[in-house]
Length: 148
Image 1 (cartoon, rainbow, N blue to C red):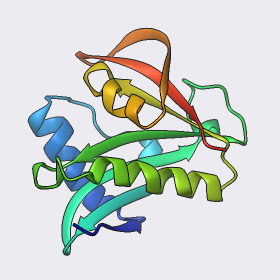
Image 2 (image 1 turned 90 degrees about the vertical axis):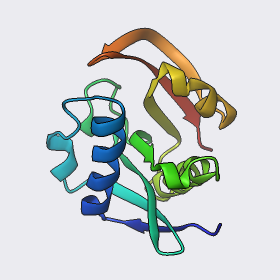
Image 3 (image 1 turned 90 degrees about the horizontal axis):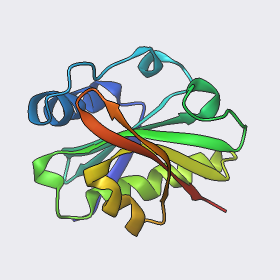
């Protein structure tokens, strides 16, 4: 399936994040002040006009969990609806997010991955670092990848 991307589609991203993180996974606090920061890039994926998934990315200066550097970006809230799973949508979203970050001068991408999702990110070249931490009720660990 061909996938198209749209930046700035926060309303669509919110629909995906609500379904995946709140309804399916039981998170309580999915949205934060970062969502409305003008430096935030909300990225959505569509296939045949149907919303499939989303991610958000931003410069590390916006996030306290990673040392701020102009060439370091953070990816988060990667979520794919059931209709887009097992079709490569997540990998395509990651590739597009990395391309966007590179266009903004990023040399590396960091993300705070759910432990169950680490194998997915490892296949895309990300390496885990730091301690395992609880984000609400789910174990997470930081991961990073050099982009250049």
